[in-house]
Length: 106
Image (cartoon, rainbow, N blue to C red; front, side):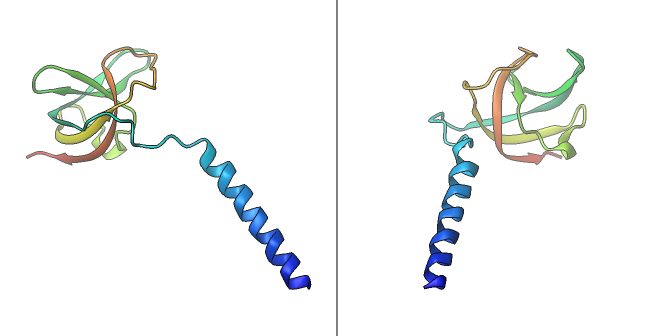
């Protein structure tokens, strides 16, 4: 009897924790197609500074999740990303993107 009550309580607690944890998460799937970008990481001295990526075609991208090891001015990279129209930025410098994959080019 006590075991069944404990299992029901444990299940309820796990369910509540899962609901609270995942209710605020934004899924990566935004409905946007992947961007295939080759470009250069730049430190932009605007509002305290940030690292952006300028594609070879001149398009400016403001990554929301550029890993710290890529915070190198002049670093050549290739990345897959999705645009994030559901986010805004104080910088207003380029298209906000969420990086899905990134690699350093030689």
